[in-house]
Length: 207
Image 1 (tube, helix red, strand yellow):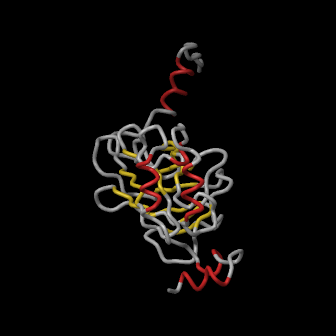
Image 2 (cartoon, helix red, strand yellow):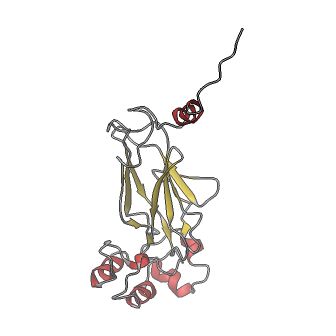
Image 3 (cartoon, helix red, strand yellow):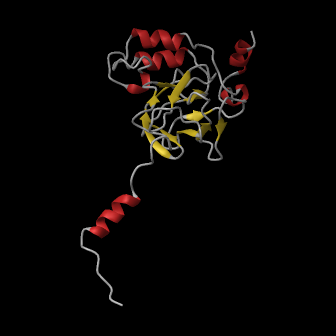
């Protein structure tokens, strides 16, 4: 019995077949899906970040988890003491949820502080869907939105600073200041937020 060698081009072609993208209708399609351009996180969790996942044939994908990972964001902290529409992963710096029947995932992200380096990374079923800068009305990361946060943001007026650009227009403006003012008094875990605050601050919180 004789053995015939395969032509040289056959082996590379076999390798290419092994790494073809999923067939239509299978798995989430990063290019055909939608990730909101702005990621706003308030300690009270009252701003939604939206991810809409689609399969390669354009139909909704809801067969796994969508994850938002903040682990590379030094200075940003998630509020983890409340029940949300998402789960906080064991790392404490990432959240996840299953999309609904339309492939939509709403994340009312509760957290504060700024991402001094890096960005939040978005995944669907472990597949990278891009990254987003984090803008939080809680600019100083104490889990309470106060006039101190407004003052910090005012120092960025006119700059192209994604950490203070809440409407994603490319520049920090008076509109962004107004957005932060609309969050004044919003807080995360009260006891944690007031560890470094005075008793007077606690009384104000309960008035």
